Amino acid sequence: MKEVLKLTNLSIIFGGLVAIDDLNLTVNDNEIVALIGPNGAGKTTCFNLITGIYKPTTGNIALNRQTIVGKRPDEITKLGIARTFQNIRLFSELSVFDNVLIADHLRVNDNVFTATTRLNFKQEKFMREQAEQLLEEQGLIHLKDEKAKNLPYGLQRKLEIARALATKPSLLLLDEPAAGMNPQETMELTSLIDNIRHKYNLSILVIEHHMDLIMNISDRIYVLNFGKLLKTGTPTEIQNDKDVISAYLGE
Amino acid sequence: MNNNVKIKNIRNLIISLILILATFAILSFLDSNSDEMGYAISIIERSLIFAVVAVSMNLVNGFTGLFSLGQAGFMAIGAYVTAIFTIPIAKRPSVYYINGINELIANIEIPIPVALILGGLVAAGFAALIGIPVLRLKSDYLAIATLGFAEIIRAIIASPMMDKITNGSYGLKGIPAFNNIYEVFILSFICISLMVLLINSSYGRAFMAIRENEIAAESVGINLFKMKELSFVISSFFTGVGGGMLAMFMRSIDSKTFQLSLTYDILLIVILGGIGSVSGSILGAFIITAGKELLRFFDEPLTIGGVNIPLFKPGLRMVVFSILLMLIVLFWNKGLMGGHEITYDNIGKFFKNLQSKLRLKQASNNKQTIKER
Ligand SMILES: Nc1ncnc2c1ncn2[C@@H]1O[C@H](COP(=O)(O)OP(=O)(O)OP(=O)(O)O)[C@@H](O)[C@H]1O
Ligand SMILES: [Mg+2]
Image (cartoon, rainbow over all chains, first blue to last red; front, side, top):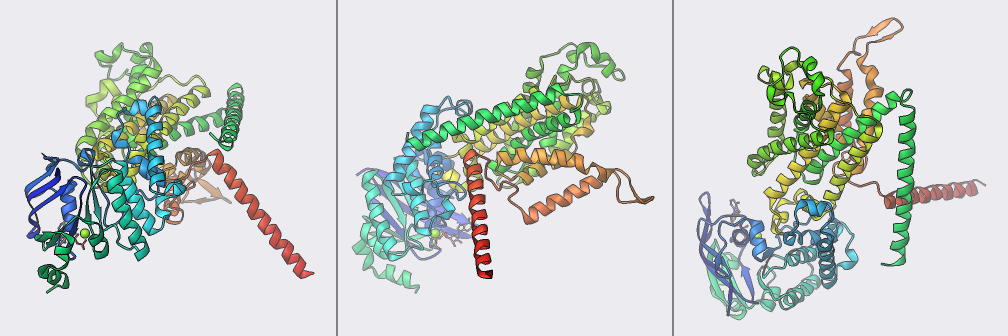
């Protein structure tokens, strides 16, 4: 099995707080891996480390065996890691279409002059077609011209995933994608995640509190507590683990 | 392409042609009656020049979400570069008669379009240098840095050290004027069109993504520093060109032309027109420029019935303007256009809305009369 993402002895310290403490984690090709843990366990921090928003204090992050520590977030996206955010971060005043279209900019190889003078019209056309196709696939095409901020919450989450997919990632990081969704929407999301993994041949690392979703789709689970790895295993192993249960009940 | 879109395109083409013809009809009327219409022409020319600068301020402040206050500085650079290289060589001894002229520039005269572009490029070069350290910082240090920069440029221009180049505090005279209003119109049109094309390109979308959410923009692969720098440099280029145009319009400039109040005027235009709206900035440029002329009486002494009203003295106009600015920010913070553009479709919608509103009103009036009966 091919390792897509590998975190080795990863730590980050904020002031005195060890937010991630000596974490080892791997995501294999085409695998869905869940990262769970109580509030403040360090899950989002882990994503921020992988995407280059924070620099680790020690340890290594490798994408396809190449270290990505010290790279900027936009460089990391170009290398194939895309993400969504716990608090949705859309380009709110822009249209649904533009939100997705912007994510194509990273493949623009014209300079600003050819873009301004429209000498790149072929590429522009290609980008538009790609964005349109993606919206079609994600069932958002009818909302194309709607401002992102006017979408209902569940669709905003969906759009954020579509935007991440538009960067053509090999690894997708989802930070609590089901937060604020009703059971119906959560079910749809579950199948969506499983769907895109096959369709776009992705590896997915997902943070979630909805246990149904996690147990349904993940191949393996990592449990974080106070920045430390508490347990790792298959859904059934984790479900019945005493330590995990007590961590969640807050003993 | 479906039929509807085709019809719309043809319609837009026809409206565009009519608008172009109308514009040139107006311009040619003004131009052929330039003696009587001199005042109107100068207001329109000034408005066009300010429209260029306002749109370029909007590019960086409205579309990219940065906060630059260096407009006066970049305009000064463009204006001085244009002036220094276009004042006819024969005239120069009389312009620099007090301090003399630096030998290096004494005999270099370049064509006006080249000088305008050069002015823009020098302004862009300075912007690039300021941007490199400042735009890497997260917050709004850009406002402070550009504000300081504009004042430093002004001080340098006026300093005795620069006497032989900028003619120090005496300023430069004898700058060649535009031959007619067409030149001003076409130059402004080109500058603004280029910026509109940029805004609607994939680079423009990247700028707007940064304005909307920096972290999200980064997460879709946008290099924040590179795009901010690009936007700032391009904006400063056009601001410099606008400065050069202003120099040609005014024909004589000195360091006082480029005080902070100039930046303030442009900011007012951008805010009035609507942050993030090109058509708003153009509209704003015309309203503010014409409005300033109308408000000119505030600066002149006013006597009513033999009593001199003490408030009315030079400077009051700026007070009135500041109050206006505050009122807009407080009550109308999206400006005239509120981030929208004037497009044919939007105008159509506007009139349709108006029509249906009128109809509703009429309907309710009818109801009322029926009831009254
Ligand atoms: N930039 C920062 N500076 C200081 N402390 C931080 C920073 N970012 C996160 N932390 C701290 O690190 C710890 C882990 O936070 P994190 O957001 O990763 O938790 P989480 O597991 O995502 O929790 P939740 O389920 O609530 O989203 C928290 O105690 C948080 O306060
Ligand atoms: Mg979190």
